Amino acid sequence: MPRVIIADAFGPPEAYRIEDRELGSPGKGQITVAIRAIGISYVDVLTAEGKYQVTPPLPFIPGSECAGEVTAVGEGVTHLSVGDRVMGSSFGGIFVEAGNFRASSFSKVPGALTLEQGAVFPPSYLTAAHALIDRGRLQPGETLLVLGAGGATGIAAIQTGKALGARVIASASGAEKRAACLEAGADVAVGTRDADWRDQVRAANNGKGIDVVFDPVGGDMTDPAFRSLGYDGRYLVIGFTGGISTLKTNLPLVKTASMIGVQIRVFGMEEPEKMARTQACVTELAAKGLLQPVIGRTYPFDDYIAAMHDAFDGKTAGRIVLVTG
Image 1: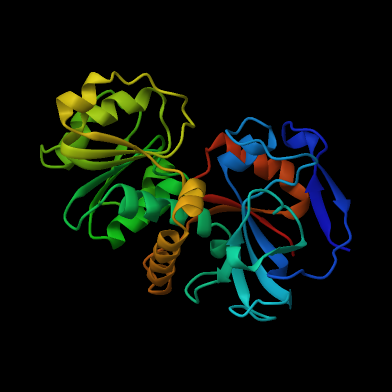
Image 2: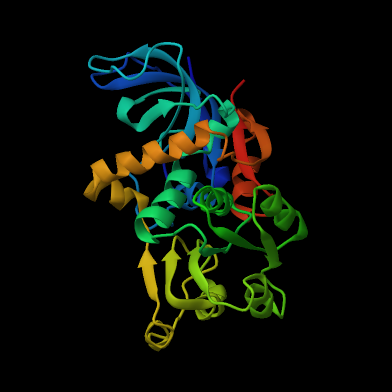
């Protein structure tokens, strides 16, 4: 009988417990997946605490991304078969050893990726691609500044930006994270908390303004990062791990630049066909070996509390992954 990590009320990782749960056959349009690897992000833990912008129903099983093998296929599923290595996402319900999921939310893991990499691939890399391609209009030869570059979406944005032909400047808080950013393909890495941060960014772009900023951080980094934009610069708001900023509304006018919100969940609901094209583009880039998630640390399934704290603290360079076997 597969085990699940569940809670009857939102709270810190310690509020969650492991219990056995019966698993029936997959329904129409579903697949059964034996999960081998589970990605954990800051947002996963925030959601588990009931503090995310969308509150799921209780009782709640956390998690939004995983990879494993298909063990059964429901009626109407044609793009996947028993034995396929798959990766996919869901808003909750992922912290399980096996589960029934919508087949449309899963795809085959590209041969260039391990299951651990596949587990953290879909949300982060699709978010990065949607932000940079659909919202940011990033062009070959432009310069991309990535804030929080050592985190989940940060590494994804670095690699996606490079794959799209941009020059990438990564901003990260620690030496280990900056090294991971350079290894991921960034052209330059600058220290987020350095007093001369703006000077470093401008020097890294030969004195010119930045074309696109990818910001999953917010907080007190928003103002100086927005001021680093050049003409027709695009500022992509991904999240607020550093808090909500108080950017003055005259800055977009003075800089002749745009602030653009990015929500992958809304994108999927409003433009499913366009999202499918973006997803196909991401998968193709991964198959070519251009997108390679960086795994920072893996934990056994039973050590989910430590893994969730690690992901929330954001100190580990690379992604945090739970493994079931």
